[in-house]
Length: 187
Image 1 (cartoon, one colour):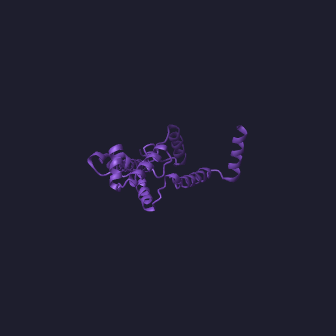
Image 2: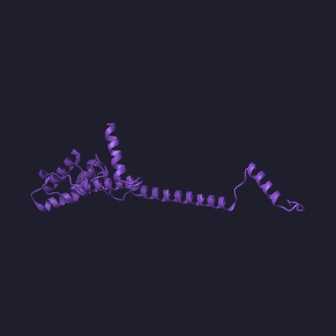
Image 3: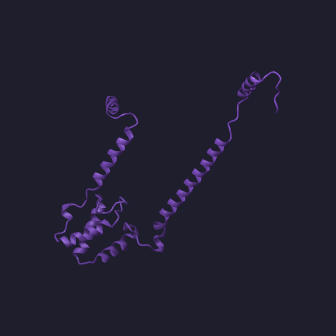
């Protein structure tokens, strides 16, 4: 194991200049995330024979939240529950339900949380307003912090730094040796 770590470290030093490892690693990580997220989880055995119905099912699936992954649609999720929900959507469409009837059925069963974009109602007000409130609040905190910091820096630049006792003694000696003999200090 130790040899592997040393080999990887020497490769990093040889091919990636110091200070460049994190940006290169970050770019590679983002590439992998994009490549993986573009793959759909819909299995071939789930696809409906009628292209119009399959298109409706895919559109509905893109708007429904995977209850396991929570920030992923059931169309993109490979979780078993997401597969069950995709099959349920397709069953309801095959039975002749409209898109709204399918959504109403799922909301009755799982609540508004199953929708990736819940309706703007009093019960979902926190979902819609909490993020903007937190962003504005965070922005105000950062603005106040930077304002206080800039005032402190300006005040530090306006006032010269205090000399230590040792520096004051050295300064007094230097000033005394440079003055002509008859001059006295005014202070």
